[in-house]
Length: 296
Image (cartoon, rainbow, N blue to C red):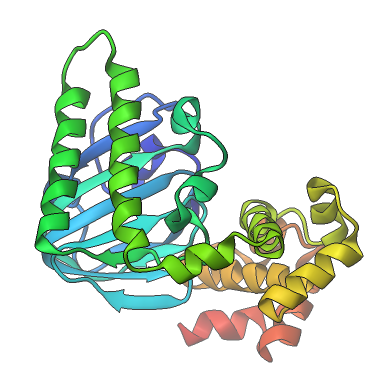
C-alpha cells in the first residue's frame, strides 16, 4: 500500500475529517491529535509514503516496523521515516508528542544537494530512530512548537518561514545524529557507497515497474557491469537481489494487508501475468502466493 499524498494518508489512515488540498506539501501536528481516530487494535498497516515523516514521542505506547526491523519506542525517541520506506505500527495507545509530514520538493528551495546528502538520517541504510537526551528533546520540542505556531498563523512570509524552521529542525536532528553515528557518516562519503545509496533510492522508487539492472544503470549513467560490481562490493548483494528483495517484501505486504487478487497483485508489481508472479514467489520463498496469504 502506497500513499502518494499527505491528504490521502490523513484521510485513510488517521481518519482525519479535515478537507486538505490534494497538493498539500507540509502538515505539522501533535501525535495525540493525529492518532485520536486510529484504531489501537489495528494500528497503522504496512504502507509506504511518497513523503517524509518525522515524529518525537513524549509519552504513550508505540511500536514501529521499518522495512523488516521492529522495535518498541521509548519517551524522547525521535523517528525519521524517509519517503518510500515501508512503515507499520501495530500498537498505538495514549501517545503524546510532535509530528510533521513534508514532501522533499517543499524543502528544495533551501537545499544544496539531495536530502540524504545533507541529512544522512534520510539515507535508506541509516539508523532511523534516535534516543534523545532530555536537553536534546527540549530543543527539538521548541523547534516543533515554532513550526506549529507559524503554520497556524497568517504571516506574509509563511511558506519561507516554514521552510526555514523545518531546515532548523533538520539541523538540530543532524547535530544529535552526528554525536552518535559519525562512523556511518564517514563511510557514506566514499564514491562507491554514494553510488550504492543512489541505486537503493532508485530501487525504492521504481521497483514495481523496473525489474532490470540495465534500467537503473541507464538512470545513473553507468554500465550495468559497473553498477553490479559497485553494489556487490559495498553490500555483498547483487543489484538483482536487491530488486527482488523489494518485490518480495511488497508482495508479502499486499498478500497480508489487502484483499487484492493474485492477478491484481501481479499487475501492480508489473509481472507479465499471474503465472510469472506465482513462479517468482515460489522460487523465492518455496510457497505459492495463496499459501503465503493463508499463513497470515
